[in-house]
Image (cartoon, rainbow, N blue to C red; front, side, top):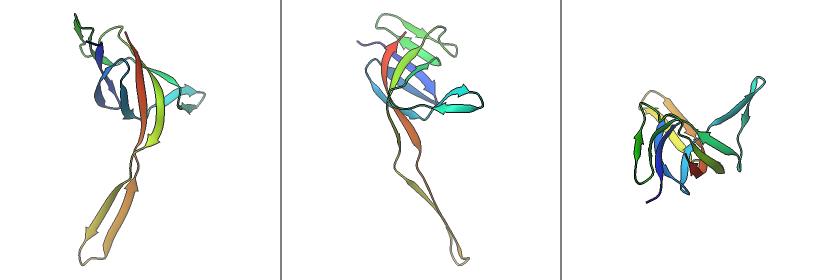
Amino acid sequence: MKDFAIIETGGKQYLVEEGSTVRIEKIKGALTGSVRADLKEGDKITFDKVLLTDNGSATNLGEPYVKGATVSAEITKVGRAPKVVVIKYKAKSNYFKKRGHKQPFFEVKVTNIK
């Protein structure tokens, strides 16, 4: 059985194992001066909010996070999800609003679980 972990990022929890690909919320990069750098494909990121790790023989459960545990990953794709269209309409009152939204995401490949 492969090592796996449960990480928290973007307000959500993901079950990851080495070599798996996961689609997560977009993450801002490091602060340089007064501007945050954008991350791009090929960049490496580290998740330190690890809730649980399992290596096949021992399970470590965090309270809330496992101390010293990290998950390393590489960004393989930066994109935006399909458009979600929101329509607000009220009959007989001349009220119609149409808005669209494309949620940005990162697709990351987990390289190492420590």
